[in-house]
Amino acid sequence: MSVEVEGAGGPLPRGRHGLSREEVVTSQYRRLCTAVLEAVGELGYAATTVADIVTRAKVARRTFYSVFGGKDECFAAAYDLAVGTALDQLQETVTGMVGVSFADRARFSFEIYLRVLASQPTAARALYIETLAAGPGLVAHRARVHERFADYIMAVVRVGVREGDLPGEPDRQLIDMLLGGIDDRVRACLHTRGAEALPELAPLFTRTAIAIARTGE
View 1 (cartoon, rainbow, N blue to C red):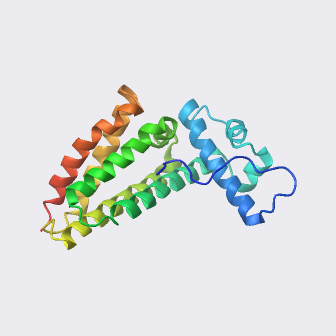
View 2: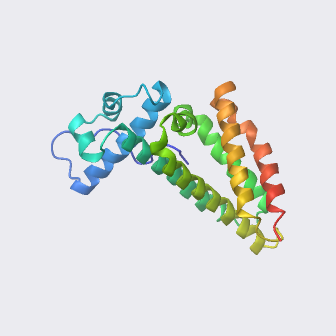
């Protein structure tokens, strides 16, 4: 699983490559999304330029502007795509497990996600710290990603309810509070201890998720 953009690959070969126009555009889009996460994670959002992005993506500036209107639009797209891809993979892996308790599903979820963030520190910094520096233009994107995380947790809870592991679904607002706390702890860890320490947060997140899930009626 990756919080970076899957399938980005390297630059397209010169000359005839046998790819359709749609495949070329998709490759360029994904390479640019990966590049902006790398650049923002390394340089900071304010300091990152379009030149930094296209250099890492190995595409021409004109190609960048044929896909995105500017840095803000590119970063927003990368944010949506990276987190959405990670959540899709996580949901497929964890909700598909058989004979696993809710407590273990929650633990697996946090362990997997935090290990991935720890293995990709520049992407983690871009997604959790530099999104705040991106300003109001990313507010709607952060809200949408928050809802996707909440949907994922509720999907795991529903499996627990269906299998008789939980009494019922908890108040959705409590899930929102859980996610706010997770975001805060991840940012604090990135600031003070670095991405390599993120997996140590898994037990705390698991205990909190179990306590909230068991409030359902």
